[in-house]
Image 1 (cartoon, rainbow, N blue to C red):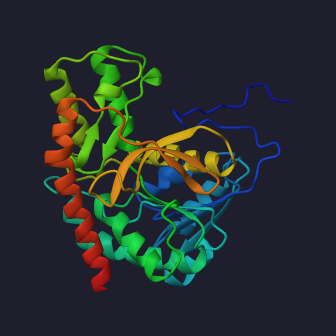
Image 2 (cartoon, rainbow, N blue to C red):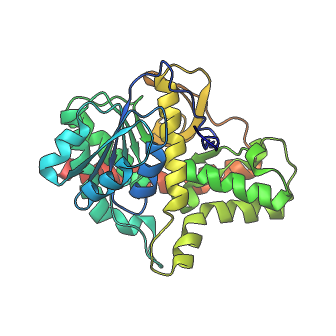
Length: 338
């Protein structure tokens, strides 16, 4: 006899469903023993849309998997360590999410991580191409503005690239925008939504405050201050942690929200929308984040930029596009040298 109700969980854009009649989905977390990977794996272990969870890393993944496996939720957890076990982690995966790589420290930009993380993404993308070429791939590893291009080039070389199934995870920018706007205006944060377009680094992040729901009036001073804070949210956390890491917990929650949206789409749920970076022809940037409808084959429809304010148009043309184009080119050049 149970004396207490079972705990329930609810995340914005990440509704949980009964497992009755649920389809079986395997999610692989590459970098699952890291600062983002561990809390992300914990959230995925609690998600009833996940029936198999593979935790991979260069070290300690088996310990993380053993720990997770004691949690009384249905997902079966396996741990995989090193090159020899990467294939087993990926085989049969429906979704692969990649938080692997080194984090930022104070004074570093996301681009300072490029050399180390670029090599990691290239290697993991090659393994994905070999072991689960039809999986949806969600890239968290920074600099996302470059690593998405590296992953795309690796998948193209293997002949398995599907632009509908490769995603740069920009959800944390949306999470921050919701939080900061709600705090500034004294609103219920669970009822605020703010689309964020562009990229996932500094000036390439463009919150569309003109499209906030519910409709909100901002002064120009508020618009400029909120835009800067949303753009620099990651640096705010890096500095606050004073060398002890970057945004891990909030990124794990945002990463889980996005992965769950992918799973909802895979299940055939209609109207699943998330902001994410995908291959796009809407701007001169080959990869660009916008609201996207998700479905069983990944991207169903790019929902576009919507109507931009003059301020947003100026930011897009003068700041977002030039910097993002440069970062994408840097990633492509790295991938094509290797």
